[in-house]
Length: 297
Ligand code: UDP
Ligand code: MN
Image (cartoon, rainbow, N blue to C red):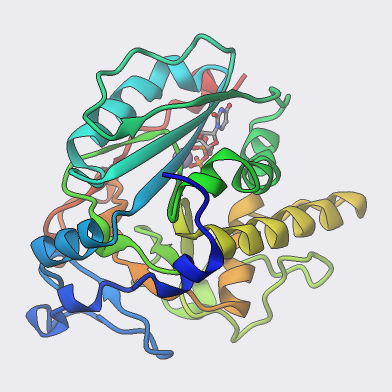
């Protein structure tokens, strides 16, 4: 697949609306106040979404960072389960940003699926590894994945797929509801409240609290998102500030200012530590247990 010119991009149907059937989940919120679908298990027809994507001959990118101890600990399971569940039957380009090089396990890839690897610098603090992703992603989207993919997802590596994560999740911009916070009242949400930070949200601001472990969209939308977040992180750093939840705080500010075109229910990125919940039917991604003391230093 070559360069995708903007004419082609504008012809893409990006919401896969033919697949939606929100009436099938009457007990949960399936639409945001600004009219974007919130995707729950059963609220879409996966086969229709698959067909619509196939007709458009899409290439879907998935960027993953794995630095320090994270490649050996998480990368193999993430990639193996992605081969089973992520955009099955579509053309997929994983884009793995790693350090040390050579830490990427051999995983058998299905037809039409590729896995280029890029070496990135190792930051000293885990917070810096996490935050540096926005800058690196911005550059990457201007390069290979940006040229070849129509839509891109950016994900944390400390999780694995446990169910179908298909084209129903694609849209111009996609945000993930945070599984620990989706049912909390707005005033309790952990937005950055320091007015000096670029990520600052005033009381009363904020639609939902989004999880930075999964976000996606068109290349153009993600270029805008990563520029905003990398700029905000640099602004804060120049003032000796660090937002409460690092890159996630800036991501939440971005999605407050630029509403996502699609929102994924917590089923798409679920923490098993929460335990069973009636509305969580089939989780798509499961967080790995946190073993920070061993991993981060
Ligand atoms: N990461 C990494 N090495 C590190 C720290 C972070 O590769 O030493 C990457 C990895 O993709 C990870 C993401 O940054 O999933 C976010 O960090 P982490 O998952 O530890 O943060 P949390 O989800 O706990 O906020
Ligand atoms: Mn994580």
